[in-house]
Length: 245
Image 1 (tube, rainbow, N blue to C red):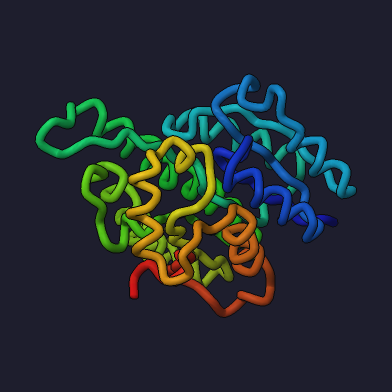
Image 2 (tube, rainbow, N blue to C red):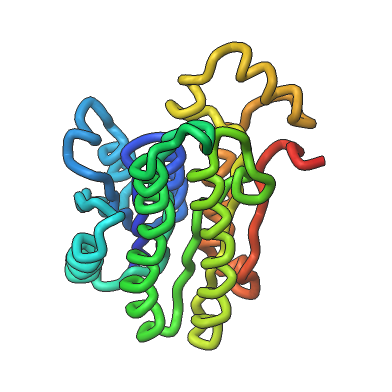
């Protein structure tokens, strides 16, 4: 029986690239995003099905505990197993700390961090009973090094790194791995909104002098979702073109 991967926030960008790559690896794909409008004028589900695997969209706000519980139950009933969880859903609401309203901070923490707890709890319980599974969390270089104007985003991604290591320790004896990837500056709709001045400043920090592509994130996630990584857990793999050096 084919394995099944559930990927949060997978209608576009990095999440869609991961869905396509895991489908190429032979996995059925449970797509997730807030609502079906996210998949309008978007052929990602058809592209995945064309690879010969099954795919279905499950809409839920992953910052909401009860919605995650219901979605995970639905995915399990539809596919029989959940073998891979990719916690990809994330937003930015940037601003300097001194001027940031409380709700702007709380929203990013809820979507980026609380969603990881929600999904990992419900999927982790299934994986523990199966005694197998791979959980991959999308962190960020902002969580490793901080970034001015992103105290909320940096906090959420730093928390994900701590959560990754804790889950790896809690679930390791059940043959469930948990790892994180920390992308740097990747070509996505999020980075397309930056000014040319901002883009130039970012490129100056990168050893490879270019942005990464979503497919380059997906390739590392593919490894972490495979049996090639069966003895890798609790790790954070930076994918940044050398931004930290």
